[in-house]
Image 1 (tube, protein in one colour):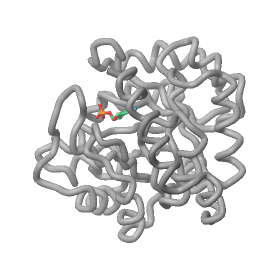
Image 2: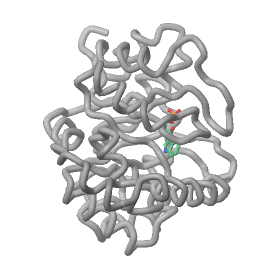
Image 3: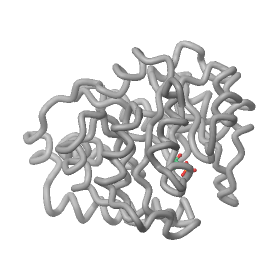
Amino acid sequence: MLDAIVAKKKITVEQEKKYLSLKEIQKDISFGKFALSKVMRNSPWSLIAECKLQSPSKGRLCTNYTVLELAKIYEKNGAMALSIHTDEHFLGNLADIALVKEITKLPVLRKDFIIDEYQIYQSRRAGADAILLIARILSPAQLKEYLHMAWEIGVDCLVEVHDEKDINAVNDTRAELIGINNRNLKNFTTDVQNTLDLVKYCDRNRTIISESGIKNREDIERVKKHFIRGVLVGEGLVKAANIAAKTRELSLVKGF
Ligand SMILES: O=P(O)(O)OC[C@@H](O)[C@@H](O)c1c[nH]c2ccccc12
């Protein structure tokens, strides 16, 4: 599935370049302020709350709320940042970033499959504070190059890792934010234990978070003991009976 999404993404990006060239995009961007890393550096715990309406493996996850409604609930209840899908397989849309930025003050991570430098500038032009870089779909050279390009325009990168090989590639860069993904890329199941197994390979000077399959305080207590500074949660939030309460629970809001 990942391969198919990436193949399709390559075609989409080539089409987008025809519509608006890289040069034109580069002319039209304001510099970012590294808002995500700033927030995470200053906070002992960060919930990055994902506005996830659908996933390719599970289908529709959320029908009662729009991306904007979710963003507002998350902000009001203690989330430190928002993750906004912009890939079609997740019902995402690049324009959602600007809409979300209009109604919240939180840093916004663009959640997509970045495989071309074009998308880095495109993300900033769309208003993103940060982008996801998935180590598995990039060569070590590409990873370094993309981190540098993003850094030059004030955009943070959350580098996602799935195994020891990915982590070795990231340790060899200056990436500040690392996300250990608990999702098995072959069968799409999630296991929080993956974070505990892999965190020992990560350079401790980075800000490390746990991604996918986080459902409750128990999961958080488990990873928090092992130098994890935050979580990225989608399904656990959007499928909760009370999304506001779940956001407070996973944000570690006092008195919950
Ligand atoms: O819904 P979950 O299990 O809480 O997972 C959120 C997030 O980690 C997941 O959406 C994700 C992590 N990395 C990705 C890369 C592409 C698409 C999706 C993802």
